[in-house]
Length: 361
Ligand code: HEC
Ligand code: HEC
Image 1 (cartoon, rainbow, N blue to C red):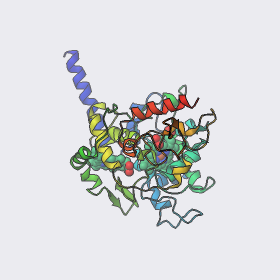
Image 2: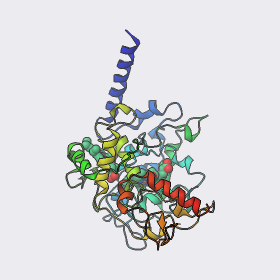
Image 3: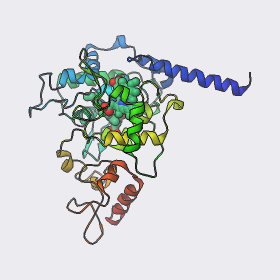
Image 4: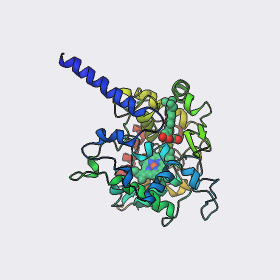
């Protein structure tokens, strides 16, 4: 047998393994062990504490425990989960799936709090989790000392025990989504609508409202827009983050980023995601004034680090009446809102760098 034939056969075996890992709705996390080896191994579920097991359940059916019908509400009377999503709808296979923002080593990663210019705070694990409650789940922060938070942390801690001796958390592969190559043009929701109808609608439904499972109080196919979907202020409310997630993981029955041959064309990922982001979704207006406010520890105003694809006001940079770069929200934005939604983003990135220089940072 020639080397070429061997390579082809090996490639086919890999695709078959990836396809096998996708069979059914509940993927066995242990399927990912060969991918994560040698740096990481999914820990034995038998070693999970009762708190961690409860945390896994909250992770899987977040709405059941903390949504509008749970009876648990924040001090301001609002539900902790404002939509109907669960952590596991995005952090797929209960936070173990490569390239689906896995949380396999998140507890180690956040042992040293990491500064976030968006929130103007150094985030430890509870703060980071609450970021997803407020934004991805369009709800409210859960109390840091609550049993829910302790259980969620116990589960994420449990996952981190799989880091193998002699390896650092940075060496674990698949922690980031795969990024589709940048588009020079604006992403097209019109072209994306056709892709959605061909490749997404069968599961997520024509109106994007998904398919709900009453028995588990969890989506079988999550809502992609409307009141039960993630917030505009979430990472998934931004085209670059959402397109990379879609590129790496959807359609769910055909794509597994462990095998790059399964991925759709980059252009299609941008356009279909543009279609999702052209639709209405939850938004809490406090994020207009509170996000990217203040000055970071390096002395640079956080506004100058604003994500170019965060499309809600106050987009950055701005220009004053004399045409000079500005970060004062009283001045008009330099780019139309549509460009912050659909791109192209490089001109905005360049302008932010120019603004930074001209303002002396
Ligand atoms: C709508 C999708 C979505 C949902 C639902 C969601 N998240 Fe996230 N989460 C993300 C994305 C995307 C990121 C990556 C960071 C970013 O760009 O915002 C993230 C990041 C994180 C991180 C940091 C990971 C890292 O390595 O930096 C943690 C921890 C986390 N989420 C926990 C949770 C928990 C716990 C829940 C449920 C209470 C949850 N998330 C619900 C999308 C989601
Ligand atoms: C075979 C069914 C199926 C198809 C087809 C499919 N998805 Fe999904 N999608 C899922 C499932 C299941 C999840 C959640 C995974 C979970 O809960 O474990 C999901 C999750 C998502 C999420 C993250 C959750 C959220 O609320 O933001 C996005 C975004 C998404 N899909 C977009 C798409 C797009 C775009 C397409 C078409 C290119 C697509 N999906 C096709 C089944 C599907």
